[in-house]
Image 1 (cartoon, rainbow, N blue to C red):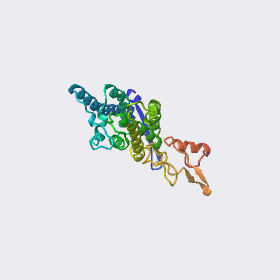
Image 2 (cartoon, helix red, strand yellow; image 1 turned 180 degrees about the vertical axis):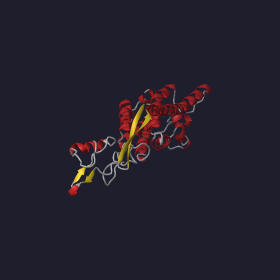
Image 3 (cartoon, rainbow, N blue to C red; image 1 turned 135 degrees about the vertical axis):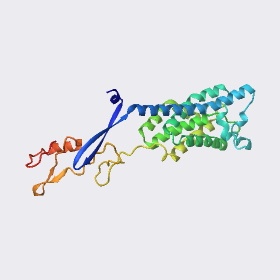
Image 4 (cartoon, rainbow, N blue to C red; image 1 turned 90 degrees about the vertical axis):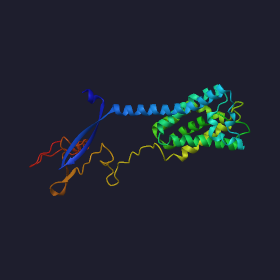
Length: 291
């Protein structure tokens, strides 16, 4: 009994020599729970690894007394080209890095958990796209920090969930809107605080929206509710759905060519039982059928 409590049955129906059989197959719920827990842990590890590099760079910068601002983006200058790839790793001070830590960890965790097939591609596109757009539209000066990547992840998660119309991803879109909806004001120079690179925020948001549209056909998709139906009879096929009940025909011709309902046996499906309710069984002469 203890083994059966943690298992969920799936019923497979099949017919053999006009006899219907039902075979319950038990799948452990603990296996699914362990799989989801493992995915959550792996996503958290990837997010922590992403955060570890900026912290190591800041510790190295503070310990050696270096100023690595030259690794940021300097718009439209040859010396700022390298910053397209390195600017998210450089921060102005410890407060700047600590401010970017919670949203970067949470949004990157969501990316690796819900979009694990394309998470690396999305992160690379946002990373490089944010630096490239900042290099093109930014005002003169060194642009550093992972804020652009944070904006790119937030806008990607929001628009990707809306475009895919998949309930779990749409829930993440609403959660991102609730937690980080106020970030949109820092994309405009009228509302951005002094010393903040609003161009980097706008560049990250643009890169995130572009990735949401470019990758909308890849990664997790909304399941098609009619994927297992046949065009001929409009029913579910046994190969596509484990709950499908292959019933060749519930009607059999009787005397005079008038179709009558064949009464299913106790092993038949619930669909056959419902069919018997609309046509009460007639007492046969030579053969008994039980419903």
